[in-house]
Length: 48
Image (cartoon, rainbow, N blue to C red):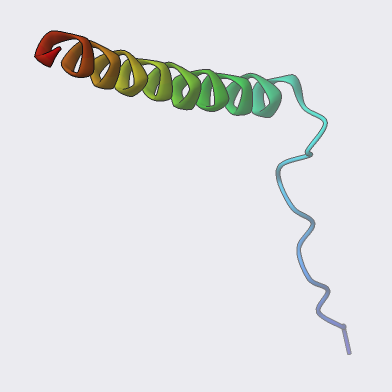
């Protein structure tokens, strides 16, 4: 009789592809935050 083992995860957290995707997501969030800050600054400066 065989035992069933849990399958090994296909992804390894140290793979460069996952690090690149994580870095891209972080850069995207930072770019979005900078864009929002720029829009707030523009609107605040525009009304003065």
